[in-house]
Length: 474
Image 1 (cartoon, rainbow, N blue to C red):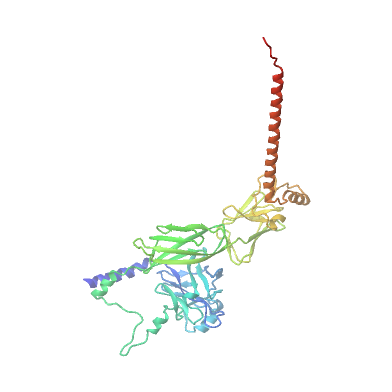
Image 2: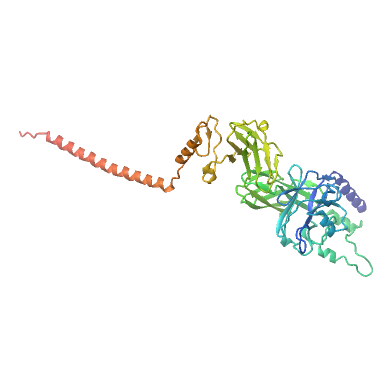
């Protein structure tokens, strides 16, 4: 009877895999090769799902998004498609990688890669700019220049023998593969259908792996989307359980079940986001994940060209999605659509036929999706000196309002400069205190003199009234 129960278990186990969605995760990283590691960095991904995954249009991210060169470009092999239970390796230099691992025959993709030897985050980003897989490594975990790679083995990251395109193994695994006299030792143990084994299978709880899904680089002051991915050891995806988020900036969220949400970082910096997952029946956390996000100031600048076209430049080293951003001029607005990607260090030019701006415009504003002003062109002298941190919105009247005064559009440049300088002379903060004290003193002294004058007048009036009376003796 137990034999049939075990048989039924395996039948259900393997047939249910047919309905599991394709899932890609980071499984091995070579970030610090022994000796000089120039062009020797690589990252391995694994598709644990039952469907193939095509990576066309996807990006590799190590702090910035990088294009995946489709084989055979730059020495790559195979294709951008990962079949079920297959691996794919991204290499900083495909030709150098093959020189180091000549027996490798799987999917090999050449891409730009620059991993630090201390700590960094590697991610796989799909064509919709959604982070599909991500891992933040640290040199204290292993793989720091000793010839080993950092590998995910049985759900735990540790150092091990480099095995690109194959199942990972730690140093201890390789040490225990030696044969005893009289027989060989297999790497995996096969269970027979005994009663003891069937009982064990009945009580093995499913392992669960939780991952943070988010962009690595985000802009301060703007909402950024965070989500979680929970995968069980059989490949099933779940949203159940408790999810406790620590955003690294003093903010914490708790969700049951999992929830996609937005969070705003108000200041630039690097923040460590941690996610603890608890099964509904667990007291101790079942899994945890962490992600380092880099928060940067907006680096998008505008320029008006001669024909009224708008030049939009990204001066940072990170690409940026301008979805929802707005350019305004003379009460006309142009809103960027979804997936308006501006590459790092690049620029685009928007024709007046697209923006519908006039050809003789002289001033434009760039606004965040939240409505806050991100950039003004041209910048006023006061703004360039850093004395004004906030810009007023464009007026709906015939006047254009700068960040410090109302300017008549017919005024000359000289008049505007004179009025700006005269209206914005800096006033020390203590001046208001001194003026208030002086006013109180003057008011007090005046009150004293006024009171004395009233009393004196009352005294004189009393004396006059007394003199008017005459005493008559009878």
